[in-house]
Amino acid sequence: MHLLRILPALVIFAGQLMPALAQKQKAPPGVNSLFAELPIDDAAGNSILHDGESGKEKIKENIFIIGSLNKSVCYAGEPVLLTYQLYTALQSTSVVTERPTLGNFNAEERPLNNELPFQKRRGEKNYRVFTIWQVLLNPFQPGNWTIDTLSVNNEVSYTSDDKKLTYSGIVHSKPLGLTVLPLPAYKGTEVFSGAMGKFQLHAFVTSSRIAAGETDTLHLEIEGSGNLNAITTPAILWPAGFECYPFKEKWTTVKNAFPSAGKKTVTIPFIAHKEGHFALPSLRLSYFDPSGGDYQVATTEPISLDIQPPLTGSVQPAAPSRPQPVRGKPFDYKWIWGGLAALGIISGAIFLLKRKTRLPVEPVTPTAIVLPASERVAGELETLKHIDDREQYIIGIKAVLSRYLQEKFQTGDIYGEELADILYNDTLDPVLAGEVRDLYSRCSALLYAPADPAGIDRSLAGAVSLIVERCEIHKNINVPS
Image (cartoon, rainbow, N blue to C red; front, side):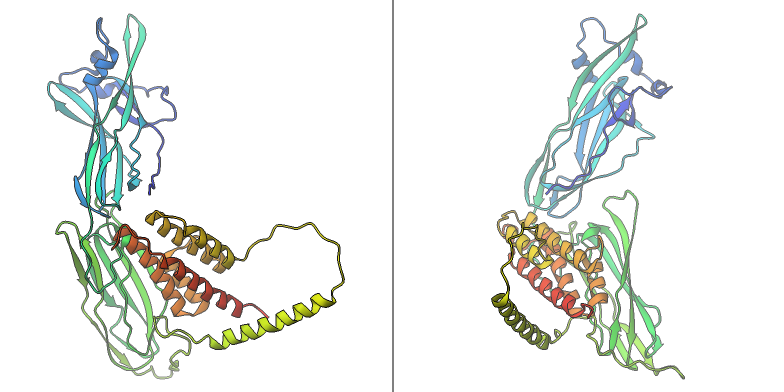
């Protein structure tokens, strides 16, 4: 899998890095002054090609690229930083002409800041050093991988006898090797979603003492550094008589930090319908710590709640008759299935009766048939059966489910747990919302920390079919009469 945002070409004019649309773009005024402070070497003077000198050889002796990884050995799913730097002692216009393909990684380009390039002395020369490409890699497949070379074309200009002369040449970086280790077998009891790094978990409520029927809020904070995209909200076991509502998530990240660092804040409104003393159980977040090579669990202390009698003059709301928004016993749909079956039999009988009495009609030109969403899903899942690549199969499963839910419930471009919250608001079906969360969580776990990297979990397609079936029941029930 290869996810890479390609930025515009990067051009270095006389050692100044600039975005460029064409190699022939003119240098800005005064750019040569960048080299005035060099203590020994003069870029303009060094750029002159003397008799007997080869332009390509001169460029190779004065311009080169160094590629580096922040580590040469990592675990599958552990972020790695790839950086390329250009060293130049000439007055050159340099353009990146070829990048590594990075086909064995998920890759995300990082923004560059070359406003203040630094100087570095190597041997007897001083160089201006520019970061020309930096990529955050996320390797999912264990193995020994080689990162190909990066190439830069350099055009050097100088003036001789009032004539402007140029010569050019290409320089290449050296290939880089990266060893990706498989994760050790996970033996924990909590769901491991692929979180990798170091994290802390905190939980508290707005008020530990409230009246029954009043709204309180549980606040969760997940803070640390690593692959933040794999962090999921821990499961919460609510006491009997508590009702929680869809929650909100917010990420606050540190700009340009590596590894990625930040804090995820989750706010969950809830109501207790019974007075008494209760405790919200400890929350647990499982993650893998690459520095120690083992799994860790971040935990919180139980939270004590003192639920007082309802406020004087207030009406204590009864415990909701609708299903609680937590996983539990599925709603009984037997009467719905019986009604739908009877309706189908009656409709079939009416159809047959009409068919026998229908008068012959002239044939018409067939028109394009738009398949119902559920039938399209069945066809797409059938197509996925022929995919042998595990990652592409999992990505396809998530895409099929997301497209169906976005169309059926008009959610827009929303995915994951936020999508499950919207479904719950629409259907009041906690089992359906839980099934959607479970499927996205399973897909994340298989992508980030597969127990069997070589196998494909074909049961994911069946899980999607069950979710679609349950959604169709809701949409049939809620059709306006």
